[in-house]
Amino acid sequence: MNEAFERKGPVRRLIKRMFIDPLANYLPAGWLRGLLAFGKSELAAANWADPGGWRSMVISYDDSPTQVADRILVGSGVMAMALRNRFRLVRRLLRDIINAGPPPVQVLCLGAGPGRITLDAMASASEESRATLVDLNPEAFDYGRQLAEQHGLSDRVRFCEGDVRCGLGKMLTEPPHVVKMIGLCEYLTDEQVVEIAAAAGAVMPAGAPIIFNNITRRHGNDRFLRRVFGLHMNHRSVSALTRLMAQAGFGDFDVHPEPLGVYNVIVGYRRGA
Image (cartoon, one colour):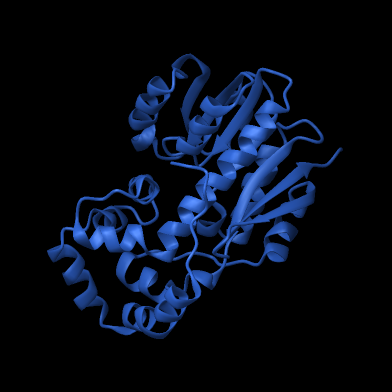
């Protein structure tokens, strides 16, 4: 995946708003699911099995699907384009934090899945880093270990299954210098966001950064995603999400919007006691 962000020109934005979004959002959901099933959409199948799960992220990130339906959804769909923009933006931010050292930088990734962004950032950084990748569901760990081996990082990453709200400190060998919490807040209630961020903050030194994101309705397909893919996401403004993170002990937020306006990647810093 290259570093260039993906954008839609004014004509494509107009066509999307006037024609594509109304059709996707208001055609009968059964028809749309049937068309995607007939077209053997791997992205749809991944979301039906696990809405928003790691397999759908892998398909969206790689942007080279074999099925025609997925070429449309992944190649030109705003949601998939925004996901790839978020990937590039987070990778760059995390790489810069690793390069700022001092090495070895300890990275903690929450809701990690296979840890693709973290592994890419570590591999492209000039300074040494180590990572602990935590997820409630270990299904993606085998794929993550394959990626780590491809990057030559097998001896520098650990995959841990568990709920970070219960005994996160026991999963760590060193306090994290940076925490990555990407693709997680949109699936959590306000209470869960605060609980998980507070658990991370409890093991972080003062001044350490946490990277997280919100999602807005700028993708234009919330109704389609809910009715057809089963994705029920919490859309929060930057101010609403940073208020929650402030309750968990973070402040001094820097906001980095991706070009399509669907996601904002936010960096906050652990406040002192």
